[in-house]
Amino acid sequence: MTKTISKAQGLVQNVKEFMDKPSTQALGMQSARKQDVRRYGKVAVIFGGRSSERKISLESGNACLESLLRSGVDAHPIDPDDDLAINLRLGKFDRAFIMLHGKEGEDGIVQGTLQMMGLPFTGSGVAASALAMNKSRAKLVMHGLDVPTPVFGVAYSLEQANILAKKIGLPVSVKPVNEGSSIGVTRVEDMAQLANAYARAAIYGEVMIEQWIDGADFFVSVLGDQVLPAVKVKPANGFYDYNAKYESNKTQYLCPPPISKEQESELADISYRAFKALGCEGWGRVDLVQDKEGNFWVLEVNTIPGMTSHSLVPMSALAQGMSFDDLVMAILAATLNENQMSVGNLAQL
Image 1: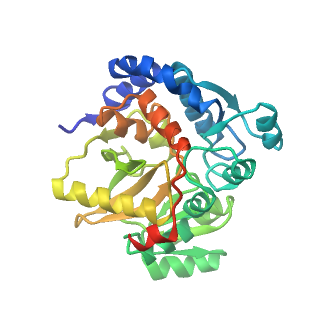
Image 2: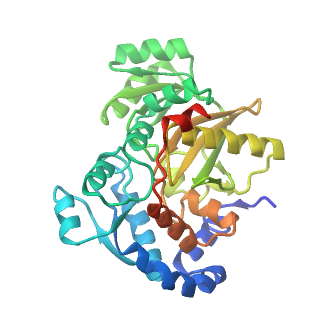
């Protein structure tokens, strides 16, 4: 049964409650967890960092740290700086749970450091992280593997932005190539708005001009090889921006969404193909929009999505019957495996 929820009551509140306190299912599993958590050794939960998404990373990381501690894992917080590798070595950590959002967290940099040190870590590897973080290159790969994604172009000047916007056709989305959480994103409906939109995005580096598809926002979480129930989001102002994601009391969430079984299957298939096309592993979230004709379009793939009370992965897990603690332990458990994406896997997509 579909649930329509606002921040004040319903799914978001339920997620917050099940993050703060283990569910009955989780309590029943605690003894089993405590018997085998020693295999993880000492775990560094890496969060905070220096990106524009530091605030959200702190919230996500603290939630995951508290969850791991509830499950009996020997987990410790690490706020990375230039001495990250030294601190990890001195701390004698056995693996890392990465909850860094944005640059130096989702772009392969911290993954490369951990790989060089021989420390297993959660989520995708170096190549997939770097690729997914770069929206324009990720979209080129998806386009090449027939994953539907909106038309776009990269502008290195305002003049190029004007040319691309006219060629694509208004409205367009003007966004940084390497940022998340809708930071620096503007919907442009009139060419007179383009200069300000470009300047806002250019603060963060390369700028992407993308076809704006009017429709419904969908978010699909992937955990291992499992596609979790999708979440349909209905922001009050029609745009799921930073305010709608983290601050608004009026954003509504529908999980599972009110779509047919056929559309549900198509949505899961497209999302999983996008996730694997970029070589992603462990867990992540695929962001899509459904146009007025019912077609789904992939906007981006997030390799380290948020894990706050407002976040969508915990909502999907809850709809699947998973407690927050079970979700966090499932993410950590993947560090015990060495399933790397190969060229052969891509050929099978």
